Image (tube, rainbow, N blue to C red; front, top):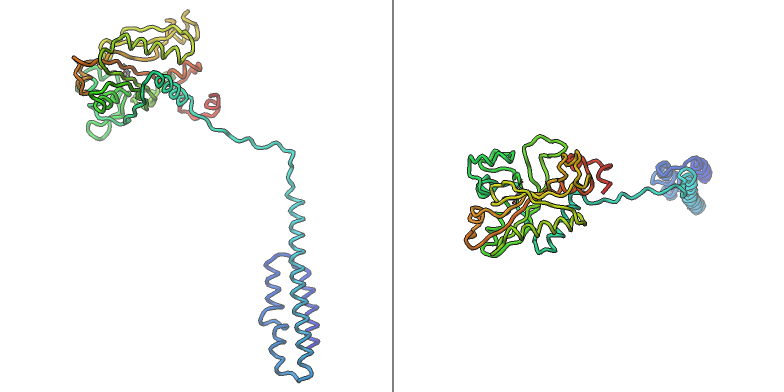
Amino acid sequence: MLEKLDQIEKQALTALEALEDEESLLQWRAEYLGKKSVVMDAFNVMRELSKEERPLVGKRANQVRHALESALEERRAQAKQTALAQALETEQIDVTLPGRPQLVGRLHPVTQTMRRIYEIFGQMGFQVYRSREVETDDYNFTYLNMPAHHPARDMWDTFYTDHEDVVLRTHTSPGQVHAMREYCPEPIRVILPGMCFRYEQVTARSEMQFTQVEGLAVGKDISFGDLKGTLSDFARRLFKSDVGIRFRASHFPFTEPSAEMDMECFICSGEGCPVCKHTGWLEILGSGVVHPNVLRYGGYDPAEFTGFAFGLGPERITMLLYQIGDIRNFWRNDLRFLEQF
Ligand code: DAH
């Protein structure tokens, strides 16, 4: 038995030298120190040995077991060291390499313009009023003084839905009636920003989907003069200069009288160029004095209340502010474009 233990010890230690990974080390332990190994078996067979032999074998078996256990620990430590040394060698970090830049997100240019618009109107006492993007035909047209079959509806190419009378709003103007019905009979001073949709051919100047900011003031003694003053001041604050503006008579079914506001062309300063189609002026919004029928639909008595309204396109304004030539850029998601703002 003693000889057998010597032999096994030698064999085990030799075998251990060739092993590195944890899996084969575990296998080795099972083989030489496991329940069925020769070393462990020595403790079992001891009972059958003579009195003299027993302590000798017991002592030796214990020695071998400890020797193997500590050899295993040593081997493990060594293997760890080797792996570490190898990793240090192969996974060297070059600390002199330039770092990876962190991409910093930013607001979409149109969102930036919208926020600037909120800020300016906020300073003038207007609150932001949100209303829905999906509207009934009544809100989109009828309550804005365009009864069914009225030819003025043709001015807005509309997305109709499968639901009877439900449309994607073609402008933010329906929000005027929502706001009036909520505030009546209080005076109103709100802007209504949001997405609008039109069933239109997409070109450099028009999109199927775009934002608008609507404005509405209702109260007693509100006149066309208030409209002019408010919008002129708005243009001055937005474009940060004494840019020339003009009001041009126009027609909208929901305002009477109606006007469009133009600003002096920023490219040619009024001389005339291709951008302004040689007029020297660029249109930036539609506006007017709220039509009595619209006031009535909102719950107000037009004999007592008057108001003004306007609607402007933040994409258009952003194009003017940054001299962007194609409205489709806003939805292209091209970082080369977006990162410039
Ligand atoms: N809703 C009009 C459009 O989309 C713009 C507009 C014109 C809004 C005159 C108004 C307004 O509130 O008074 O073309």
